[in-house]
Length: 169
Image 1 (cartoon, rainbow, N blue to C red):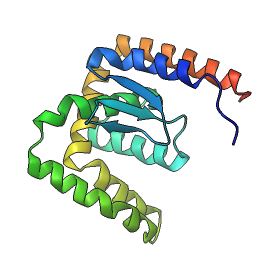
Image 2 (image 1 turned 30 degrees about the vertical axis):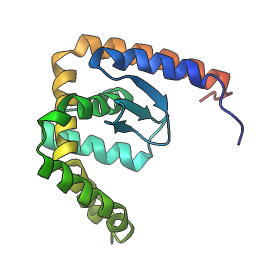
Image 3 (image 1 turned 90 degrees about the vertical axis):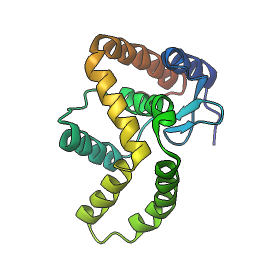
């Protein structure tokens, strides 16, 4: 696989978006994730269509929130892990991690789309995931102007990255 061009610049641009929240760095990875050990996040370029769809359904069902910027909400969700981690009790964190280890196997055994959606919602409602999403939705709704700016800056950085790597659509 060819090395991606402009990765460092993209990481720097997204890092600038999350630094005000106390995140040390953001880097392109294979998933969206928060690493509490060194307070950094990873982000991915795209989520699967299923992931976007079911997360948006969750946001609408649980929060009445229509997601205008999936990338920004995903970044804010990871920031939300950072912002809410200390508020969670040890037993909530331990419970979440135990359940998370079983989710991939449960998804593989899912009988149909509804079963799969139920499993995804189980993941989204784990104490740490729900706290992060709640923080993200609350921040977005109370800081819409900042989130619009964040979206524009993210789009600019992502478009430059795509262009450097020959992505035209």
